Length: 186
Length: 186
Image (cartoon, rainbow over all chains, first blue to last red; front, side):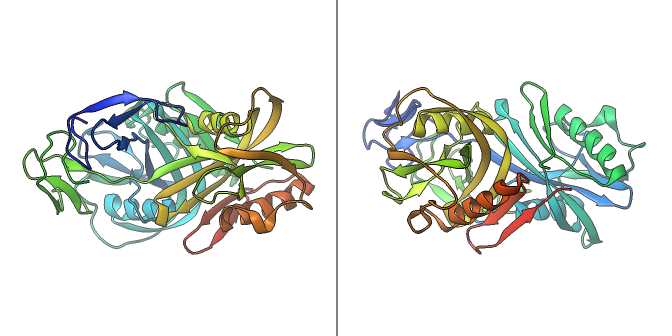
């Protein structure tokens, strides 16, 4: 951020706006306040029988590792619709959302992940260019040493265990500290 | 967005970047892609005995209506920490997070709300300037006709009912359609 997006001035300085609790980059010329907000990643664990579908990443970051279908929430769509869209784009599969499974924070990346469980419905197209491959894994065949992030591993191991008794919790994680909280609302 | 924030050029045009699925504002001069991301609002329903704490908004939007303590997630903090910080700023109360209660989409505002249940611990400071007043309400005294948004009303009415039997669901809502999904993971 070198220039003010509304007025084009290069006179930006960090200051605490009146009534605010955090310093912001403010334009000296037009007084526009530039906020720096975390982003939302929506995705889903796609289930069919005793398997889940994972994507082999064709792009950085974490190229050549396996992960769930997930990507940025776009303006105007809901988190559920975004999770379904990402499943279609990255696996070519149409899915039905079953429920929220995890909300976890990746503070150093300024991201919040909102992850659903989803039921595979049908393969409607080929996987997009972000996936080098898409494959189905059981609990026994999960590629534990080739997953994209530790938080994905923690989540998928828990998911596989819970699936055996058909009772799912809601997991809140914190990628910074490695902390994972399992919440069973009842 | 009139000027490119990295280079200052006014030559911005909407185009579909290679490999992308959505049009973005791209700088003709430096090729920087400007993403427009939804923001995250974190907050909590503060509980004590059979009451909850609400804030009377001192500022727009929805000045002079009651709502829960909530505000923008800042970069570097987790959603739980943000909910606790907003409680402290807007009510002066220190709270302990009990669990996730609602994830709801307000698509037309480009916002996702992540709302927790929280237990009141102690009053440590005065409420900040965003609150004209803070008060405790029972199910019977909830200001149903003076709440800030319909989604807040739906959530608080459900919360009050669930509280009587001590069993809480997880509510996913969609402010656009008015749709509310109650999920009981078990």
